[in-house]
Each structure stands twice: as C-alpha cells, then as structure tokens.
Image 1 (cartoon, rainbow, N blue to C red):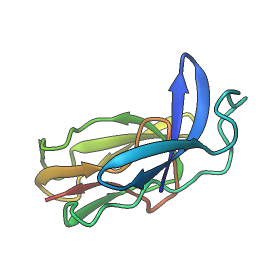
Image 2 (cartoon, rainbow, N blue to C red; image 1 turned 180 degrees about the vertical axis):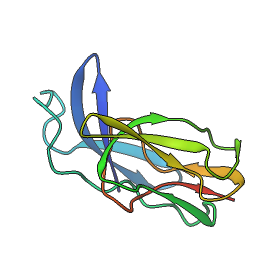
Image 3 (cartoon, rainbow, N blue to C red; image 1 turned 180 degrees about the horizontal axis):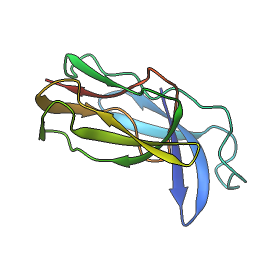
Length: 125
C-alpha cells in the first residue's frame, strides 16, 4: 500500500492505494474521500520507499519538510550537485541534490508530500 496526499481544486485529500492482482489499483480513502481535509497534518510522514527495481544511488532528504518541487524527471541525466527535489521547510526552499553523477531511476515522492530527514526521495543509476 502507498499513501498519497492529493490536491483537487484546492481541496486536500489523503488517500491510500493498494495494488491488487495483475497491475490493477484501487484507491481507498484514509479518512473520508467526500470531505476535504481542513489542512495537511502537521506531523511529517515518510516518503514512499524506493522499489526493488529502482536505482542503486539514493537521494535522501537532508531535513524534514514538504516536497515543494520536483526538479528532475525519470531518465534525466544529472551531475553531482544538481537539484533533484526542492523541499520547503520553515518557509525556506532547500534543494536536495544528486550525491553523484547518474541517471534518475525513480522519483519516490510527490509535490506536497511531507517527508522526514533521511527519507529517500529519488534514486539514480
């Protein structure tokens, strides 16, 4: 199961997605899907873990915060020090950079996700 925070027309929803059978996915609301959340939860949640087929180089959050922007796409080449994800914490934008040269294998967080320090946000090959 994977947890996501989705914003639709300014309304924020927490949803849990469970894979069933041969690639079919079914969304199940964490609380109530019909009623939007008043505000995102204040306690950060961890970003989804990297999948087994993802790259071997992990790009980890240096601080807890909220994913503000995804700077790189899967398949894109990045150099050491290039921003892959931007985190917003305490009204500051903090770039999470590639630890070495590589190609983005997976992006394991979405804009708006609350992440903890050390959470894997992306992987590189």
